[in-house]
Image 1 (cartoon, rainbow, N blue to C red):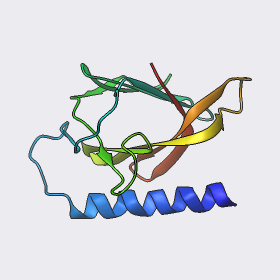
Image 2 (image 1 turned 120 degrees about the vertical axis):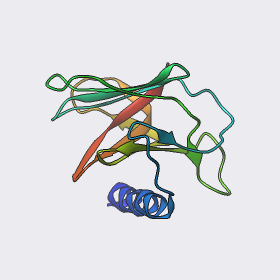
Image 3 (image 1 turned 30 degrees about the vertical axis):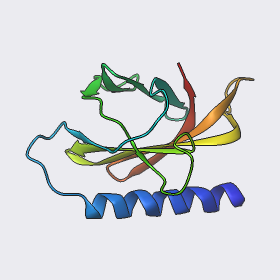
Length: 137
């Protein structure tokens, strides 16, 4: 229940960020702000399978069924008054509303393996919300 409430709060935070953002003509631009730590991450989800790789070279979204989508890298928004490593919010602009939220947690399980991840991931793509886990590369 606590995890569900946290996710709903983060979703509300992400939606309010999108509502306050200015429009842009470039449909593949990524709008974010500053954070202090390494930005090399991989986030993965199961049922349905998806992944996002984040590096200084770009942000790549992929699924087994969809062609990879690449977005330019810029630094993510962080939660005000919180450590930079706690929450990262990546707002991707283009067709639809796309947001990736990576949050530091004690343990995140992908439900498919015995591996535990230090971050949870929520991907909002158009009208879908996908959950998963993330780790620094």
